[in-house]
Length: 340
Ligand code: COA
Figure 1 (cartoon, rainbow, N blue to C red):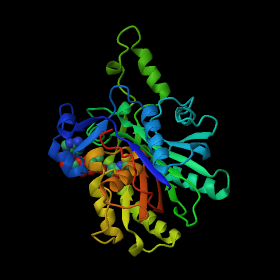
Figure 2: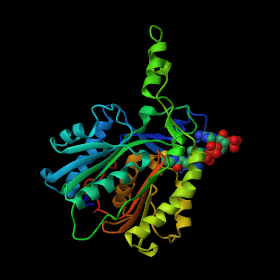
Figure 3: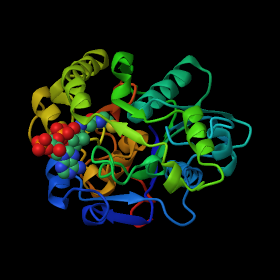
Figure 4: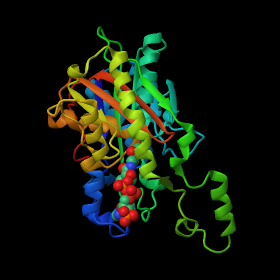
């Protein structure tokens, strides 16, 4: 990873604001998730604009001549159209029209999948440089009354430029999925069912409030149980395939789904107490496929981690899917995302 960039939406939403609608308390939310605030898009901000903004910062921070970028991978589950998919439009917004550009949807594990595909594209000689963007506007499918999701998700985008290097900076990817538990994180209706709902209201009230959102639902405790069994194995495998020992890990960047899960994972893996662990969830919430690049960026900007350090990454979520690598962190960004 040669450079990193991120975009954090302008609007900061506190737990107290979430609780104006949700039947919960700010204390419960912080206790059970570790979240204090999250950012939600507002005004002109869209998935397209925040993806391009993060991508632009990654290009600027890398200092690369952008004509060298051969592919763009947009990791997201919140691009609102299946056709056209998002990556070609974002590529053109970045002055990269014409390059290979595709979306990759793998829930909160999406960035790990994208990073793995990018590294393998480069190793195979298909391209020299890839821009990987993890971006989400989770709020477009958020039911503000749902106790299982409303307080958790946020919006944001993070991006990295991946390219060739003398030393291997991205290990083979450790990844997998469990379709038998796929319904544990799912939209409550598909497109056809949603159309039926809207059709039934035609001539009466066609507003989103009346039709309802195509909302994301999560069976939190079921995901928690899956995570407790699957993720420790994935983390050990990541160490094994990378040839790096536990003692060599300098930074731990798990997906920002729940600070309590992450503390447990770190303890169970036996990482030393003083190894810095990402805790971007506190002020960013769970941004799904954007969470890992956002968390890395936050650690580099605040000095909790340094460019060149060896980090263990693990993304997980819808699918249920996971993907992780041992990586060398990119240099700290010259143009940080805070205050964006
Ligand atoms: N506010 C207040 N109380 C709530 C609540 C909320 N938002 N949600 C649930 N509760 C209550 C329940 O009613 C229940 O009350 P009871 O004990 O009186 O019956 C209690 O809190 C425990 O509910 P539970 O659903 O077991 O909560 P939890 O401790 O599992 O926390 C999550 C919920 C979603 C925070 C947690 O399950 C989680 O983070 N799971 C994993 C998510 C994950 O890793 N996702 C993958 C990536 S997206």
